[in-house]
Image (tube, rainbow, N blue to C red; front, side):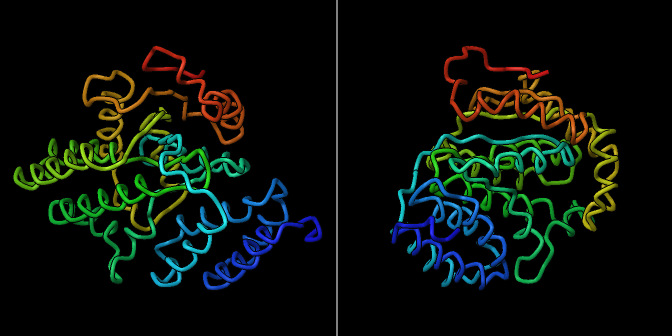
Length: 301
């Protein structure tokens, strides 16, 4: 099938892709991506750059910069892609929903930088947050804002950027920390000032928010089923608190200002039922039809 790649630019992208992913132990992933993608000269470069952005935390800085520069020389980068943020509670189905977009060559998928939160200089900051929230809430929230801002300001090789959560959702978790006295007032003030500065000065344009509306009981069951070590101590009550704040923000729209229109999707459905849900809304998302809708909330049943 490699004979189908007539362009020198595409073959250069392929060779660099293999080299990059070898350094990450992911040669089979990029090979399958390349062999499946026959859409033109920039397809391979787009996929490889997308994966570099996603896994930048596990590649050495020098290799990552060198590879991104090489990919950039082969393709166009979008500084202002149409940006969609997938929001919802822990276990609401964000990762499953994001996976549906991997089949589209015109979209770059940016999952939550969980790998960074789990390993900063060998320290699992996410685990510390759940075990000692009073002590580590400010530290974790500071780092979460930095890493989310980094994703927001990342140029992409595709006209669409789809993110798992956003810098805007950090307000939800900060609000809960304030309500439950997990953070000092002065710490909250510092985070809010830094957040406000980011909103005003950084390029964090967002075009659409997709809210996966899921009951706390359902997300609790899913969280227990996936059995992440860090989430062992997370109680149902915490999920109820986060749910209510998301409801006030994205469904009732009474808490924070909205950076973009909101599409509400029932996240209580099973994996099999979520695929038809995705099919219903993908044209709204990938054809930018949302621009013509005056309402700030669209509900997909």
